[in-house]
Image (cartoon, rainbow, N blue to C red):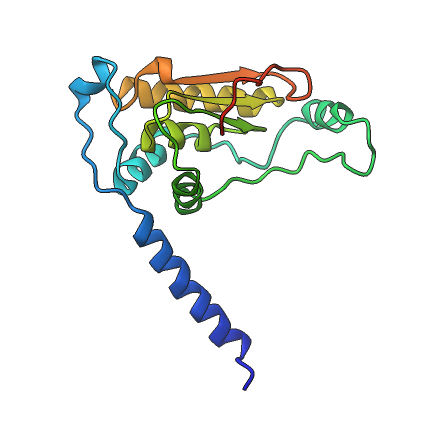
Amino acid sequence: MALSWTTKRRIMGTIMALTTAAVMVKIYLHRDEISQGNVTPLDYAETKKILREAYTSELLPFQIPQEEEDLIEKANADPKRQSSTYGEITIGGADQLLEAFDLTAKDIFYDLGSGRGQLVLHAALATPARKSIGIELSRMRHDEAVRAFERVTASGALHPKRVELRLADILQDDWSDATA
């Protein structure tokens, strides 16, 4: 018996909801621990709240100036692979991805093409990873990531030394210390 497209979508929606619920970590973050350099991951709800507050600008994440599009298009010599297309992982998807990585305090997490830095900040907030680093070629997206990072650190939810945001080309930058 073949399932209708609607039934398949409902089943997938249920599976996604259950998966998201299953990966939620129930750990409370104490602000004084952060100031002392201790790392206690945030739970899903607190991470989501902090990230939503950090990204308050009117910037549409898919729009960048033409000169930045041109720079990104030129960064890759293979014409079949050139693209300035941009998208962001959802907070639930990021939580699932980071759960699968099972990062420890020894890990250094990299997001290559980090855009507005949402996954970088999520990794720093929700995992015990030693450091979370983002590399982005677009200045506009990088600047937005820096503003969001400043909002998160100003809230006291994150120690600034746990995140690094680089404006660089991933093909020329050194990320050899990455573990994830």
